[in-house]
Length: 252
Length: 252
DNA sequence: AAGTGGTCTAGACCACCCA
DNA sequence: GGGTGGTCTAGACCACTTC
Image (cartoon, rainbow over all chains, first blue to last red; front, side, top):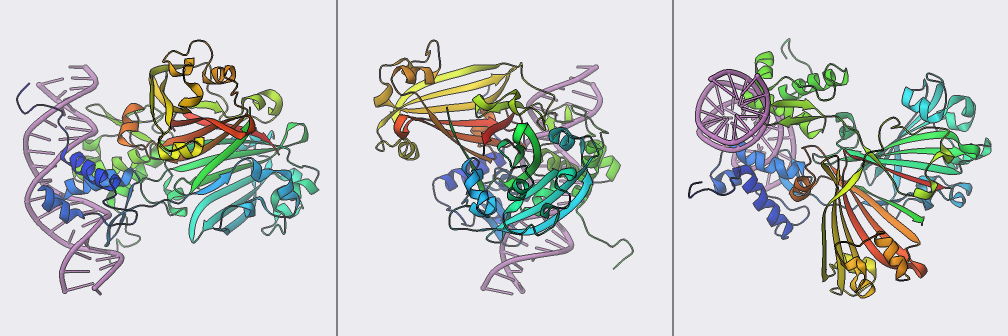
Protein backbone atom coordinates (compact mmCIF):
# COMPACT_ATOMS: atom_id res chain seq x y z
CA UNK A 1 0.00 0.00 0.00
CA UNK A 2 1.42 3.41 -0.97
CA UNK A 3 1.34 6.66 0.94
CA UNK A 4 -1.65 7.96 -0.96
CA UNK A 5 -3.68 4.86 -0.14
CA UNK A 6 -6.88 4.81 1.87
CA UNK A 7 -10.40 4.33 0.58
CA UNK A 8 -10.53 5.58 -2.99
CA UNK A 9 -13.79 7.31 -3.68
CA UNK A 10 -15.11 8.49 -7.03
CA UNK A 11 -15.14 12.24 -7.53
CA UNK A 12 -18.87 12.30 -8.19
CA UNK A 13 -19.49 10.57 -4.85
CA UNK A 14 -17.38 13.11 -3.01
CA UNK A 15 -19.33 15.93 -4.61
CA UNK A 16 -22.66 14.23 -3.89
CA UNK A 17 -21.62 13.61 -0.28
CA UNK A 18 -20.69 17.25 0.18
CA UNK A 19 -24.02 18.44 -1.21
CA UNK A 20 -25.97 15.91 0.82
CA UNK A 21 -24.20 16.99 3.99
CA UNK A 22 -24.95 20.63 3.21
CA UNK A 23 -28.62 19.81 2.73
CA UNK A 24 -28.78 17.82 5.98
CA UNK A 25 -27.09 20.68 7.79
CA UNK A 26 -29.87 22.97 6.63
CA UNK A 27 -27.62 24.98 4.34
CA UNK A 28 -30.16 24.31 1.62
CA UNK A 29 -33.70 24.10 2.94
CA UNK A 30 -36.78 22.61 1.23
CA UNK A 31 -37.30 24.27 -2.13
CA UNK A 32 -33.84 25.85 -2.20
CA UNK A 33 -31.79 25.85 -5.36
CA UNK A 34 -28.56 23.87 -5.38
CA UNK A 35 -25.36 24.78 -7.24
CA UNK A 36 -25.86 23.85 -10.91
CA UNK A 37 -23.71 21.79 -13.23
CA UNK A 38 -21.58 24.77 -14.22
CA UNK A 39 -21.05 25.74 -10.59
CA UNK A 40 -19.92 22.25 -9.69
CA UNK A 41 -17.59 22.04 -12.71
CA UNK A 42 -15.91 25.25 -11.65
CA UNK A 43 -15.88 24.54 -7.91
CA UNK A 44 -14.49 21.02 -8.18
CA UNK A 45 -12.62 21.19 -11.46
CA UNK A 46 -14.49 18.32 -13.10
CA UNK A 47 -16.12 17.68 -16.46
CA UNK A 48 -19.78 18.28 -17.10
CA UNK A 49 -20.72 14.60 -17.02
CA UNK A 50 -19.09 14.17 -13.63
CA UNK A 51 -21.00 17.08 -12.12
CA UNK A 52 -24.16 15.64 -13.65
CA UNK A 53 -23.46 12.26 -12.13
CA UNK A 54 -23.11 13.83 -8.69
CA UNK A 55 -26.48 15.52 -9.02
CA UNK A 56 -27.90 12.28 -10.39
CA UNK A 57 -26.99 10.50 -7.18
CA UNK A 58 -29.01 12.94 -5.09
CA UNK A 59 -31.83 12.82 -7.56
CA UNK A 60 -32.15 9.05 -7.44
CA UNK A 61 -32.04 9.26 -3.65
CA UNK A 62 -35.17 11.34 -3.93
CA UNK A 63 -33.84 14.28 -1.93
CA UNK A 64 -33.42 16.58 -4.92
CA UNK A 65 -35.42 17.38 -8.05
CA UNK A 66 -34.28 18.91 -11.33
CA UNK A 67 -36.36 21.30 -13.40
CA UNK A 68 -35.31 21.69 -17.00
CA UNK A 69 -33.92 25.11 -17.74
CA UNK A 70 -34.32 26.23 -14.16
CA UNK A 71 -32.03 24.32 -11.79
CA UNK A 72 -31.86 21.60 -9.17
CA UNK A 73 -33.94 22.02 -6.05
CA UNK A 74 -34.30 20.39 -2.64
CA UNK A 75 -37.56 18.46 -2.41
CA UNK A 76 -40.08 18.94 0.36
CA UNK A 77 -42.55 16.44 1.76
CA UNK A 78 -45.93 16.72 3.39
CA UNK A 79 -47.52 13.29 3.33
CA UNK A 80 -51.18 12.44 3.75
CA UNK A 81 -52.09 10.01 6.50
CA UNK A 82 -54.19 7.05 5.40
CA UNK A 83 -55.87 5.09 8.19
CA UNK A 84 -56.08 1.48 7.18
CA UNK A 85 -58.42 0.24 9.88
CA UNK A 86 -60.78 2.86 11.21
CA UNK A 87 -61.43 4.36 7.84
CA UNK A 88 -63.43 1.29 6.92
CA UNK A 89 -65.41 1.13 10.12
CA UNK A 90 -69.01 0.31 9.38
CA UNK A 91 -70.40 3.60 10.61
CA UNK A 92 -68.57 5.56 8.08
CA UNK A 93 -69.76 4.05 4.86
CA UNK A 94 -73.18 3.23 6.25
CA UNK A 95 -73.93 6.92 6.57
CA UNK A 96 -73.80 7.56 2.86
CA UNK A 97 -70.31 8.97 2.57
CA UNK A 98 -67.67 7.41 0.41
CA UNK A 99 -64.74 5.95 2.31
CA UNK A 100 -62.36 8.33 0.63
CA UNK A 101 -64.22 11.42 1.68
CA UNK A 102 -63.26 10.52 5.23
CA UNK A 103 -59.77 11.46 4.19
CA UNK A 104 -57.90 13.50 6.11
CA UNK A 105 -56.82 16.72 7.57
CA UNK A 106 -57.65 19.98 5.94
CA UNK A 107 -56.66 19.00 2.43
CA UNK A 108 -59.10 17.38 0.06
CA UNK A 109 -58.70 14.44 -2.26
CA UNK A 110 -60.55 14.81 -5.53
CA UNK A 111 -61.37 12.16 -8.08
CA UNK A 112 -59.85 13.20 -11.33
CA UNK A 113 -60.47 10.38 -13.77
CA UNK A 114 -63.01 7.57 -13.65
CA UNK A 115 -63.44 4.59 -15.90
CA UNK A 116 -65.69 1.54 -15.75
CA UNK A 117 -65.46 -1.52 -17.96
CA UNK A 118 -66.37 -5.17 -18.03
CA UNK A 119 -63.51 -7.47 -18.88
CA UNK A 120 -62.46 -11.10 -18.56
CA UNK A 121 -60.60 -11.54 -15.29
CA UNK A 122 -56.84 -11.68 -15.38
CA UNK A 123 -55.59 -14.89 -13.89
CA UNK A 124 -54.26 -13.46 -10.62
CA UNK A 125 -57.50 -11.53 -10.05
CA UNK A 126 -59.62 -14.59 -10.74
CA UNK A 127 -57.63 -16.55 -8.20
CA UNK A 128 -58.16 -13.96 -5.49
CA UNK A 129 -61.86 -13.49 -6.26
CA UNK A 130 -62.34 -17.25 -6.35
CA UNK A 131 -63.91 -17.25 -9.82
CA UNK A 132 -62.99 -19.04 -13.02
CA UNK A 133 -60.27 -17.46 -15.17
CA UNK A 134 -61.83 -15.30 -17.88
CA UNK A 135 -65.08 -14.95 -15.96
CA UNK A 136 -66.26 -11.39 -16.44
CA UNK A 137 -65.25 -8.79 -13.84
CA UNK A 138 -66.37 -5.22 -13.40
CA UNK A 139 -63.29 -3.02 -13.46
CA UNK A 140 -63.46 0.46 -11.93
CA UNK A 141 -60.50 2.76 -12.33
CA UNK A 142 -60.00 6.05 -10.54
CA UNK A 143 -57.29 8.64 -10.11
CA UNK A 144 -57.17 10.84 -7.02
CA UNK A 145 -55.70 14.31 -7.00
CA UNK A 146 -54.54 16.32 -3.99
CA UNK A 147 -54.20 20.05 -4.52
CA UNK A 148 -53.62 19.55 -8.23
CA UNK A 149 -51.11 16.75 -7.85
CA UNK A 150 -52.16 13.15 -8.62
CA UNK A 151 -51.32 10.93 -5.64
CA UNK A 152 -53.23 7.67 -6.05
CA UNK A 153 -54.36 5.29 -8.77
CA UNK A 154 -57.01 2.77 -7.77
CA UNK A 155 -58.43 -0.13 -9.73
CA UNK A 156 -61.29 -2.19 -8.32
CA UNK A 157 -62.26 -5.60 -9.58
CA UNK A 158 -65.65 -7.12 -8.73
CA UNK A 159 -67.21 -10.31 -10.06
CA UNK A 160 -69.59 -9.14 -12.81
CA UNK A 161 -72.10 -11.80 -11.84
CA UNK A 162 -72.50 -10.21 -8.41
CA UNK A 163 -72.87 -6.58 -9.41
CA UNK A 164 -74.59 -6.75 -12.81
CA UNK A 165 -77.19 -4.01 -13.16
CA UNK A 166 -76.27 -2.23 -9.94
CA UNK A 167 -75.00 1.32 -9.65
CA UNK A 168 -71.51 -0.10 -9.26
CA UNK A 169 -71.36 -0.66 -13.01
CA UNK A 170 -72.03 3.01 -13.74
CA UNK A 171 -69.41 5.74 -13.76
CA UNK A 172 -71.30 7.82 -11.25
CA UNK A 173 -72.32 5.50 -8.44
CA UNK A 174 -74.29 8.18 -6.66
CA UNK A 175 -73.98 8.61 -2.89
CA UNK A 176 -72.17 6.09 -0.76
CA UNK A 177 -69.47 4.48 -2.83
CA UNK A 178 -68.95 0.85 -3.72
CA UNK A 179 -69.25 -0.61 -0.23
CA UNK A 180 -72.64 0.91 0.49
CA UNK A 181 -73.91 -0.56 -2.77
CA UNK A 182 -72.48 -3.96 -1.98
CA UNK A 183 -74.36 -3.76 1.31
CA UNK A 184 -77.61 -3.13 -0.59
CA UNK A 185 -76.86 -6.25 -2.63
CA UNK A 186 -76.50 -8.30 0.56
CA UNK A 187 -72.75 -8.45 0.11
CA UNK A 188 -71.68 -6.21 2.93
CA UNK A 189 -67.93 -6.41 3.41
CA UNK A 190 -67.08 -7.57 6.91
CA UNK A 191 -63.40 -8.27 6.58
CA UNK A 192 -60.47 -6.79 4.74
CA UNK A 193 -56.99 -7.86 3.85
CA UNK A 194 -54.41 -5.38 2.67
CA UNK A 195 -51.09 -6.39 1.19
CA UNK A 196 -48.49 -3.64 0.97
CA UNK A 197 -45.40 -3.57 -1.21
CA UNK A 198 -43.08 -0.95 -2.61
CA UNK A 199 -41.04 -0.66 -5.78
CA UNK A 200 -39.96 1.87 -8.36
CA UNK A 201 -42.79 2.92 -10.68
CA UNK A 202 -43.25 1.79 -14.25
CA UNK A 203 -42.96 4.53 -16.84
CA UNK A 204 -46.71 4.63 -17.13
CA UNK A 205 -47.21 4.95 -13.35
CA UNK A 206 -44.54 7.63 -13.10
CA UNK A 207 -46.29 9.58 -15.82
CA UNK A 208 -49.82 9.23 -14.45
CA UNK A 209 -48.68 10.25 -10.95
CA UNK A 210 -46.27 12.96 -12.16
CA UNK A 211 -43.50 11.38 -10.11
CA UNK A 212 -40.05 12.87 -10.12
CA UNK A 213 -36.98 10.64 -10.23
CA UNK A 214 -36.12 8.81 -7.05
CA UNK A 215 -39.74 8.44 -5.94
CA UNK A 216 -40.97 4.89 -5.33
CA UNK A 217 -44.62 3.86 -5.26
CA UNK A 218 -46.40 1.93 -2.56
CA UNK A 219 -48.77 -0.77 -3.74
CA UNK A 220 -51.78 -1.75 -1.69
CA UNK A 221 -53.83 -4.73 -2.77
CA UNK A 222 -56.99 -4.77 -0.70
CA UNK A 223 -59.40 -7.68 -0.73
CA UNK A 224 -62.87 -7.20 0.74
CA UNK A 225 -64.71 -10.24 2.10
CA UNK A 226 -68.45 -10.55 2.70
CA UNK A 227 -69.97 -13.07 5.08
CA UNK A 228 -68.57 -16.60 5.05
CA UNK A 229 -65.27 -15.39 3.67
CA UNK A 230 -66.65 -14.65 0.24
CA UNK A 231 -64.33 -12.29 -1.65
CA UNK A 232 -66.34 -9.54 -3.30
CA UNK A 233 -63.78 -6.95 -4.35
CA UNK A 234 -60.10 -6.62 -5.08
CA UNK A 235 -58.74 -3.08 -5.12
CA UNK A 236 -55.25 -2.50 -6.43
CA UNK A 237 -53.86 0.89 -5.47
CA UNK A 238 -50.70 2.65 -6.56
CA UNK A 239 -49.64 5.45 -4.19
CA UNK A 240 -47.06 8.18 -4.57
CA UNK A 241 -44.78 7.30 -1.67
CA UNK A 242 -43.87 10.96 -1.16
CA UNK A 243 -47.54 11.77 -0.52
CA UNK A 244 -48.61 9.03 1.86
CA UNK A 245 -48.11 7.53 5.27
CA UNK A 246 -50.16 4.39 5.93
CA UNK A 247 -51.41 3.82 9.46
CA UNK A 248 -52.65 0.53 10.88
CA UNK A 249 -54.00 0.23 14.42
CA UNK A 250 -54.75 -3.11 16.04
CA UNK A 251 -54.98 -4.85 19.39
CA UNK A 252 -52.67 -7.58 20.58
CA UNK B 1 -40.29 18.59 -40.99
CA UNK B 2 -38.37 15.80 -42.66
CA UNK B 3 -39.54 12.30 -43.48
CA UNK B 4 -38.13 10.91 -40.26
CA UNK B 5 -40.32 13.16 -38.09
CA UNK B 6 -42.74 12.06 -35.40
CA UNK B 7 -42.46 12.09 -31.63
CA UNK B 8 -38.82 12.72 -30.85
CA UNK B 9 -37.55 10.35 -28.22
CA UNK B 10 -34.04 10.14 -26.80
CA UNK B 11 -32.00 7.25 -28.14
CA UNK B 12 -31.32 5.89 -24.68
CA UNK B 13 -35.06 5.74 -24.00
CA UNK B 14 -35.70 3.83 -27.21
CA UNK B 15 -33.01 1.33 -26.29
CA UNK B 16 -34.30 1.02 -22.73
CA UNK B 17 -37.84 0.55 -24.01
CA UNK B 18 -36.75 -2.22 -26.36
CA UNK B 19 -34.91 -4.05 -23.59
CA UNK B 20 -37.78 -3.61 -21.13
CA UNK B 21 -40.23 -5.00 -23.69
CA UNK B 22 -37.97 -7.96 -24.32
CA UNK B 23 -37.79 -8.67 -20.60
CA UNK B 24 -41.57 -8.39 -20.20
CA UNK B 25 -42.03 -10.73 -23.14
CA UNK B 26 -39.94 -13.31 -21.34
CA UNK B 27 -37.09 -13.09 -23.80
CA UNK B 28 -34.83 -12.55 -20.79
CA UNK B 29 -36.03 -14.42 -17.72
CA UNK B 30 -35.05 -13.83 -14.08
CA UNK B 31 -31.31 -14.06 -13.69
CA UNK B 32 -30.66 -13.88 -17.44
CA UNK B 33 -27.83 -11.75 -18.78
CA UNK B 34 -28.72 -8.76 -20.93
CA UNK B 35 -26.70 -7.42 -23.87
CA UNK B 36 -23.80 -5.43 -22.45
CA UNK B 37 -22.61 -1.94 -23.21
CA UNK B 38 -20.50 -3.07 -26.14
CA UNK B 39 -23.38 -5.07 -27.61
CA UNK B 40 -25.70 -2.09 -27.41
CA UNK B 41 -23.12 0.26 -28.94
CA UNK B 42 -22.74 -2.06 -31.91
CA UNK B 43 -26.41 -2.94 -32.26
CA UNK B 44 -27.70 0.63 -32.09
CA UNK B 45 -24.69 2.57 -33.29
CA UNK B 46 -24.39 4.77 -30.22
CA UNK B 47 -21.61 5.92 -27.93
CA UNK B 48 -20.70 4.12 -24.77
CA UNK B 49 -22.30 6.69 -22.46
CA UNK B 50 -25.58 6.41 -24.32
CA UNK B 51 -25.67 2.64 -23.98
CA UNK B 52 -24.83 3.06 -20.32
CA UNK B 53 -27.66 5.52 -19.88
CA UNK B 54 -30.12 3.04 -21.36
CA UNK B 55 -29.04 0.36 -18.93
CA UNK B 56 -29.12 2.94 -16.15
CA UNK B 57 -32.82 3.51 -16.79
CA UNK B 58 -33.63 -0.15 -16.27
CA UNK B 59 -31.38 -0.28 -13.25
CA UNK B 60 -33.08 2.61 -11.51
CA UNK B 61 -36.43 1.02 -12.31
CA UNK B 62 -35.23 -1.91 -10.25
CA UNK B 63 -35.81 -4.54 -12.92
CA UNK B 64 -32.15 -5.07 -13.72
CA UNK B 65 -28.93 -5.33 -11.73
CA UNK B 66 -25.35 -4.81 -12.82
CA UNK B 67 -22.42 -6.84 -11.54
CA UNK B 68 -19.01 -5.30 -12.02
CA UNK B 69 -16.92 -7.15 -14.54
CA UNK B 70 -19.68 -9.66 -15.22
CA UNK B 71 -22.66 -8.06 -16.92
CA UNK B 72 -26.19 -6.80 -16.44
CA UNK B 73 -28.80 -9.27 -15.22
CA UNK B 74 -32.56 -9.45 -14.81
CA UNK B 75 -33.52 -9.34 -11.13
CA UNK B 76 -35.76 -11.90 -9.49
CA UNK B 77 -38.02 -11.46 -6.48
CA UNK B 78 -39.20 -13.77 -3.77
CA UNK B 79 -40.66 -11.65 -1.01
CA UNK B 80 -41.26 -12.67 2.58
CA UNK B 81 -44.73 -12.16 3.97
CA UNK B 82 -44.97 -10.20 7.20
CA UNK B 83 -48.26 -10.46 9.06
CA UNK B 84 -49.15 -7.30 10.91
CA UNK B 85 -52.05 -8.83 12.79
CA UNK B 86 -51.10 -12.41 13.54
CA UNK B 87 -54.20 -13.47 15.36
CA UNK B 88 -56.39 -13.02 12.32
CA UNK B 89 -54.05 -14.65 9.85
CA UNK B 90 -54.64 -18.07 8.45
CA UNK B 91 -57.36 -20.16 6.95
CA UNK B 92 -60.32 -18.23 8.22
CA UNK B 93 -60.47 -15.95 5.21
CA UNK B 94 -58.84 -18.36 2.86
CA UNK B 95 -61.61 -18.80 0.32
CA UNK B 96 -59.76 -16.44 -1.97
CA UNK B 97 -56.06 -16.78 -2.13
CA UNK B 98 -53.66 -13.90 -1.84
CA UNK B 99 -52.31 -12.28 -4.95
CA UNK B 100 -48.75 -13.35 -4.40
CA UNK B 101 -49.66 -16.90 -3.72
CA UNK B 102 -47.19 -19.61 -4.42
CA UNK B 103 -43.86 -18.78 -2.88
CA UNK B 104 -42.53 -18.22 0.49
CA UNK B 105 -42.29 -19.31 4.07
CA UNK B 106 -40.21 -22.04 5.53
CA UNK B 107 -37.27 -19.71 5.17
CA UNK B 108 -35.74 -18.57 8.41
CA UNK B 109 -34.87 -15.10 9.58
CA UNK B 110 -31.69 -14.92 11.63
CA UNK B 111 -30.51 -12.07 13.82
CA UNK B 112 -27.12 -11.03 12.58
CA UNK B 113 -26.11 -8.02 14.64
CA UNK B 114 -27.32 -6.81 18.02
CA UNK B 115 -26.53 -3.67 19.93
CA UNK B 116 -27.89 -2.16 23.13
CA UNK B 117 -27.24 1.31 24.47
CA UNK B 118 -28.69 3.93 26.72
CA UNK B 119 -29.03 7.36 25.18
CA UNK B 120 -30.92 10.61 25.60
CA UNK B 121 -34.14 10.43 23.59
CA UNK B 122 -34.27 12.17 20.25
CA UNK B 123 -37.06 14.68 20.14
CA UNK B 124 -39.45 12.74 17.88
CA UNK B 125 -38.97 9.59 19.97
CA UNK B 126 -39.59 11.46 23.20
CA UNK B 127 -42.81 12.85 21.78
CA UNK B 128 -44.13 9.43 20.83
CA UNK B 129 -43.09 7.81 24.09
CA UNK B 130 -44.59 10.68 26.06
CA UNK B 131 -41.42 11.41 28.01
CA UNK B 132 -39.34 14.58 28.35
CA UNK B 133 -36.80 15.32 25.61
CA UNK B 134 -33.38 13.99 26.58
CA UNK B 135 -34.85 11.57 29.11
CA UNK B 136 -32.84 8.37 28.84
CA UNK B 137 -34.09 5.65 26.51
CA UNK B 138 -32.90 2.10 26.05
CA UNK B 139 -32.01 1.62 22.38
CA UNK B 140 -31.87 -1.89 20.95
CA UNK B 141 -30.64 -2.38 17.41
CA UNK B 142 -30.89 -5.56 15.38
CA UNK B 143 -30.24 -6.69 11.82
CA UNK B 144 -32.09 -9.67 10.36
CA UNK B 145 -30.68 -11.87 7.65
CA UNK B 146 -32.55 -14.20 5.32
CA UNK B 147 -30.49 -16.89 3.65
CA UNK B 148 -27.37 -14.78 3.90
CA UNK B 149 -28.98 -11.56 2.69
CA UNK B 150 -29.78 -8.79 5.17
CA UNK B 151 -33.44 -7.78 4.81
CA UNK B 152 -34.43 -5.80 7.90
CA UNK B 153 -32.94 -3.25 10.30
CA UNK B 154 -34.86 -2.72 13.52
CA UNK B 155 -34.27 -0.18 16.28
CA UNK B 156 -36.34 -0.29 19.45
CA UNK B 157 -36.64 2.59 21.87
CA UNK B 158 -37.94 2.05 25.41
CA UNK B 159 -38.07 4.52 28.30
CA UNK B 160 -35.02 3.69 30.42
CA UNK B 161 -36.96 4.41 33.59
CA UNK B 162 -39.35 1.56 32.79
CA UNK B 163 -36.86 -1.13 31.85
CA UNK B 164 -33.82 -0.33 34.01
CA UNK B 165 -32.24 -3.50 35.35
CA UNK B 166 -34.39 -5.88 33.33
CA UNK B 167 -33.15 -8.33 30.72
CA UNK B 168 -34.22 -5.86 28.05
CA UNK B 169 -31.11 -3.82 28.73
CA UNK B 170 -28.80 -6.76 28.01
CA UNK B 171 -27.68 -7.89 24.58
CA UNK B 172 -28.91 -11.41 25.17
CA UNK B 173 -32.41 -11.10 26.56
CA UNK B 174 -32.64 -14.83 27.20
CA UNK B 175 -35.86 -16.69 26.44
CA UNK B 176 -38.77 -14.64 25.17
CA UNK B 177 -38.58 -11.39 23.32
CA UNK B 178 -38.98 -7.84 24.46
CA UNK B 179 -42.73 -8.16 24.79
CA UNK B 180 -42.51 -11.13 27.14
CA UNK B 181 -40.19 -9.14 29.38
CA UNK B 182 -42.45 -6.12 29.30
CA UNK B 183 -45.24 -8.43 30.41
CA UNK B 184 -43.14 -9.52 33.42
CA UNK B 185 -42.73 -5.85 34.29
CA UNK B 186 -46.49 -5.37 34.21
CA UNK B 187 -46.27 -3.47 30.94
CA UNK B 188 -47.76 -6.00 28.57
CA UNK B 189 -48.47 -4.39 25.19
CA UNK B 190 -52.16 -4.54 24.36
CA UNK B 191 -52.34 -2.25 21.36
CA UNK B 192 -50.12 -1.46 18.40
CA UNK B 193 -49.91 1.28 15.85
CA UNK B 194 -47.85 0.85 12.71
CA UNK B 195 -47.02 3.68 10.35
CA UNK B 196 -45.72 2.64 6.95
CA UNK B 197 -43.80 4.77 4.48
CA UNK B 198 -41.48 4.20 1.57
CA UNK B 199 -38.52 6.08 0.11
CA UNK B 200 -35.15 5.50 -1.44
CA UNK B 201 -32.53 4.36 1.07
CA UNK B 202 -29.76 6.49 2.50
CA UNK B 203 -26.25 5.39 1.57
CA UNK B 204 -25.87 3.84 4.97
CA UNK B 205 -29.12 1.88 4.70
CA UNK B 206 -28.28 0.73 1.18
CA UNK B 207 -24.95 -0.53 2.42
CA UNK B 208 -26.26 -2.28 5.54
CA UNK B 209 -29.01 -4.01 3.56
CA UNK B 210 -26.82 -4.71 0.50
CA UNK B 211 -29.41 -3.06 -1.72
CA UNK B 212 -28.86 -2.80 -5.43
CA UNK B 213 -29.79 0.36 -7.31
CA UNK B 214 -33.48 0.96 -7.89
CA UNK B 215 -34.53 -0.70 -4.64
CA UNK B 216 -36.57 1.42 -2.22
CA UNK B 217 -36.98 0.68 1.47
CA UNK B 218 -40.21 0.43 3.42
CA UNK B 219 -40.22 2.08 6.82
CA UNK B 220 -42.41 0.78 9.62
CA UNK B 221 -42.67 2.76 12.81
CA UNK B 222 -44.47 0.60 15.35
CA UNK B 223 -45.62 1.94 18.70
CA UNK B 224 -46.63 -0.52 21.42
CA UNK B 225 -49.11 0.60 24.06
CA UNK B 226 -49.66 -1.01 27.45
CA UNK B 227 -52.84 -0.60 29.47
CA UNK B 228 -54.39 2.85 29.61
CA UNK B 229 -52.74 3.82 26.36
CA UNK B 230 -49.29 4.07 27.85
CA UNK B 231 -46.62 3.92 25.13
CA UNK B 232 -43.87 1.51 26.12
CA UNK B 233 -41.89 0.94 22.94
CA UNK B 234 -41.21 2.53 19.60
CA UNK B 235 -39.70 0.24 16.98
CA UNK B 236 -38.37 1.78 13.79
CA UNK B 237 -37.83 -0.78 11.05
CA UNK B 238 -36.16 -0.42 7.67
CA UNK B 239 -37.14 -3.18 5.22
CA UNK B 240 -35.70 -4.15 1.86
CA UNK B 241 -38.76 -3.63 -0.32
CA UNK B 242 -37.68 -6.40 -2.67
CA UNK B 243 -37.81 -8.89 0.20
CA UNK B 244 -41.09 -8.05 1.87
CA UNK B 245 -44.85 -7.98 1.47
CA UNK B 246 -46.72 -6.57 4.46
CA UNK B 247 -50.10 -8.03 5.25
CA UNK B 248 -52.76 -6.47 7.44
CA UNK B 249 -56.03 -8.25 8.18
CA UNK B 250 -58.88 -6.53 9.96
CA UNK B 251 -62.65 -6.61 10.38
CA UNK B 252 -65.01 -3.89 9.30
C1' DA C 1 -5.77 -12.45 -20.97
C1' DA C 2 -10.02 -10.99 -22.54
C1' DG C 3 -14.20 -8.93 -21.55
C1' DT C 4 -17.10 -6.41 -18.46
C1' DG C 5 -18.96 -2.47 -16.10
C1' DG C 6 -17.24 2.04 -13.48
C1' DT C 7 -15.21 6.47 -13.83
C1' DC C 8 -13.83 10.58 -16.34
C1' DT C 9 -12.72 14.03 -19.96
C1' DA C 10 -13.63 17.89 -23.30
C1' DG C 11 -16.05 18.99 -26.31
C1' DA C 12 -21.09 19.74 -28.88
C1' DC C 13 -26.10 20.97 -29.84
C1' DC C 14 -30.72 21.31 -28.08
C1' DA C 15 -35.11 22.71 -25.50
C1' DC C 16 -36.58 25.01 -21.92
C1' DC C 17 -37.14 28.75 -18.23
C1' DC C 18 -36.67 33.25 -16.69
C1' DA C 19 -35.68 37.96 -16.81
C1' DG D 1 -30.80 36.29 -24.63
C1' DG D 2 -28.26 34.09 -21.27
C1' DG D 3 -28.25 30.34 -18.28
C1' DT D 4 -30.05 25.84 -17.21
C1' DG D 5 -30.49 21.00 -17.48
C1' DG D 6 -30.93 17.00 -21.23
C1' DT D 7 -28.78 14.42 -24.76
C1' DC D 8 -24.82 12.64 -27.22
C1' DT D 9 -20.09 11.73 -28.99
C1' DA D 10 -15.36 9.49 -29.16
C1' DG D 11 -12.13 8.73 -26.92
C1' DA D 12 -9.37 7.01 -22.24
C1' DC D 13 -7.87 4.27 -18.04
C1' DC D 14 -9.24 1.35 -14.26
C1' DA D 15 -10.90 -2.66 -11.31
C1' DC D 16 -13.10 -6.51 -11.53
C1' DT D 17 -14.83 -11.23 -13.09
C1' DT D 18 -14.34 -15.10 -15.76
C1' DC D 19 -11.84 -18.38 -18.11
